[in-house]
Length: 174
Image (tube, rainbow, N blue to C red; front, side, top):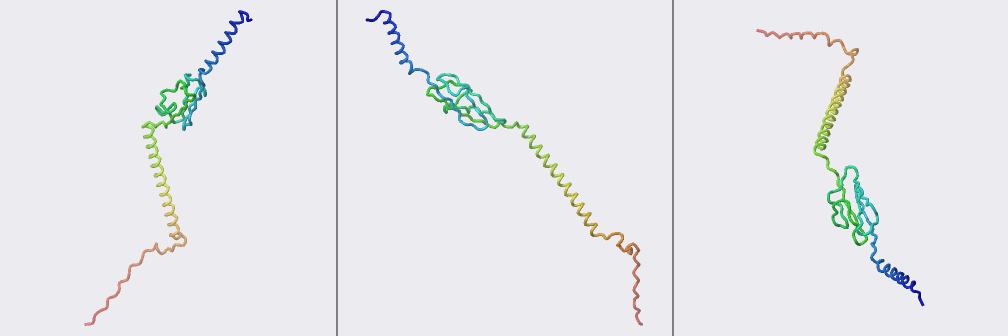
């Protein structure tokens, strides 16, 4: 025969066993957070695994000169507005995003165009000067090569030329 104190203890053990069997199937499943590879930046989730309903925060870090394209973060193919989401049911969350180059302001583009044109003008001027100096040097060398030296030059060119003698005209007989 059983003692009266043992009956409640056995009932308590049976209830605990049944409740653990019933609630074991309803425990929150842990899922993984996957970030697809991106170009020009990184996205890092606050956790790699989370239970359904747990908030996950994404840290967005674009490369220099890039920014996150507006509305480009997606969670399982659906747009994600912001960088925080609740872990969905189903055990996985796949994140993707796109980074875009930050456009230069109009004044920076204008400055670069003007600076580029100024460099072209300076280069053209310097090249023209260089060509002129080369032509002058070549002309000087050629003139030295053509002209005889002062020692070898005859002195006759300095004397005045004599006037031509008049030729006598023949006389006619009458």
